[in-house]
Length: 444
Image (tube, rainbow, N blue to C red):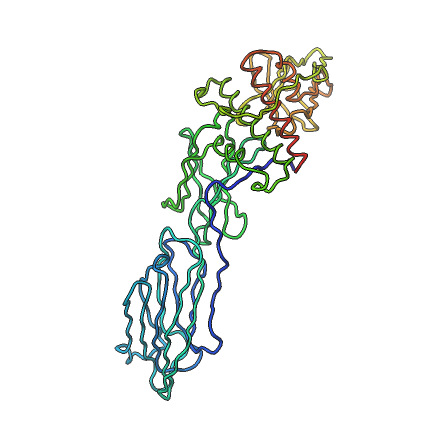
């Protein structure tokens, strides 16, 4: 498995959620509270039921809740209660956050079990812990004796339906990761990313608890200053939106941080800062090469980039063309949202031509026609930490190897390093990015 470089820091405030408790009650109490769920999100309903363990003929008290977290909706009474006592039920909301209740059960034999269920809706904008409690409880037993109890309470965990934080992953491409908290009923929510009018919908991956990760892969290096809009969507509803993320702004937050905040040693933190600066330099040179938004370069105001050290002749490479049918004519690097190496070759018969690259055999369907008998082959995406790792290619005509080369990104950089062109600048920036990636990984 290829190892990825991961840099992450919280960009959007993260809520620290307390662990929910199902029931909290005095062991001596006759009545307690039950809830149908202890974790919920905005718009969800929570059912709170008053229940008893000993037969009683009536109960009254006050149900208290936080009106910032919950809105009272309705109440239903259990079938355990005698129909003839319907008129002896009183539910009054005298003040915000308080419901006073008085309920009569079976006056002959007493009633136990569920008495009444109160339904609340979770308010938008609230998150964290909230409590529903029952107090001032007075109970009439089957002998009409009146007793008082301390009451009971339940703790609720209100989960925000929102994007909580973000990070980037530097692997074969730049990946922007968004994280969101979702209750179980919303686990099918998706994240819709919009960048330069391109819209991509991504399913979430459970990270832990109720936290999900949504990965937007393949951000091109020249797009580091472009805004990415993220919308957390469930069905037709947009649960949350974040529309101001750029890779450049994220890198700014990393560079402005410190080792302690990042949880790193000083050496690793220094290596991370160099890697980030070289990443932005690579992004800027990509912009310049493609003439893309050059009025807002990714490296603007950035310091700490690596100084390019000229590669030695050890990186100079040439193909071995030993046959009459196949000849390697060029090698290079494909610059896009990922990096690949390519090899151009000629052949007298493409159907009789195969390529063995690092032990994998490729056939005519893997080659792209350039012109006449000239073809091009693109490798798989290459990690920045592997820019200096040569890939051995052998072109076979039938069973005979007629052309071969061991080639890597750094071989291409060597060929372009002295050019004072946009391509030369791009090649040098790519090389520095790869070197700093290797240095950072050594400290992982």
